[in-house]
Length: 150
Image (cartoon, rainbow, N blue to C red; front, side, top):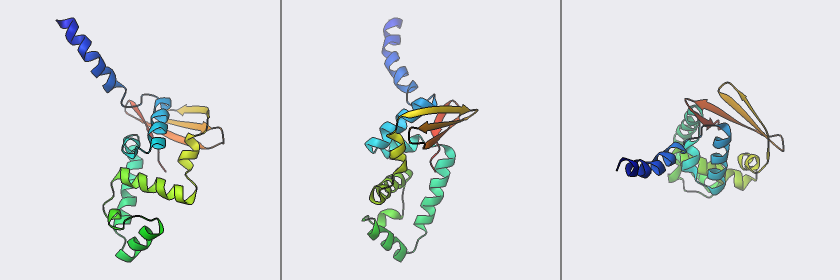
């Protein structure tokens, strides 16, 4: 009976154990998969604490815009002005990806589509350099690695 219970728990333990990246390589792979597929909720889970704070500040600034500014911004990017008032982090990331797509300069996507040429780990920071020379920064918080979104 005990063996049966342990066998039933193994898939659960494995699934829970692989949800957060334990290496910069795992963080990069999860980021790549999530960003390219457009799953901004998963991208948000991969962000460092500092990145989330910076995004929250940006969200507050957007929310503080007057109606004229919101309308102009929304019209330019073909989005709803009301959706800008109460953005979540995943919605903000989606908005940034949309803007980058419209402007033709999605640097995160460009970096994620390149082969990795080097990963340098210095204490709790990893710098991933890709073929075209771009770099992505990951930071270790506790046991896990997170993307430093700038």
